[in-house]
Length: 181
Image 1: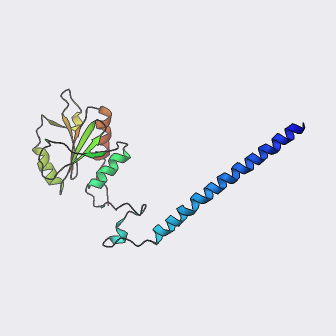
Image 2 (image 1 turned 90 degrees about the horizontal axis):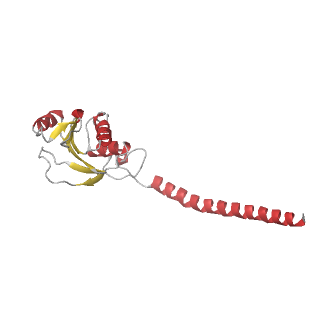
Image 3 (image 1 turned 180 degrees about the vertical axis):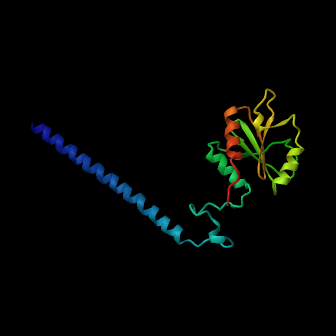
């Protein structure tokens, strides 16, 4: 019985020591975080921008314009929110439609995004696409693996993918409508 008390006391000391180590570690990480948060709050806003030129939630993230038209930052945000993890890349032999495309790698697929001034410019450019190489996303993939054409407001996107699920996810993300002001 005497041994039991010693091991119980040793156990209690070990628990107290572990609690003190954890509390000390938590205290050290909280101090720098709160100091850095105070210094970020006190930092002046960048010059030349309305309301600091940043999104309200994150002081380091630049604001994306809310104009009712697509912008590259909106496309990237929609793809990320759809779980697609876009990576910037380039591709040769894309059709010349006016604006230079932004090309994203999406797993094994690729997405070329053209952003036009307005819907009419996008419609004129879409009419020039070869209907054998580029098919509307509504028709779905065929055996020839043509690129899917996704159109919405001022956005025209060419999706090069053979994955039905990826085609559906990208299409859903970009046809849900442009971000509203």
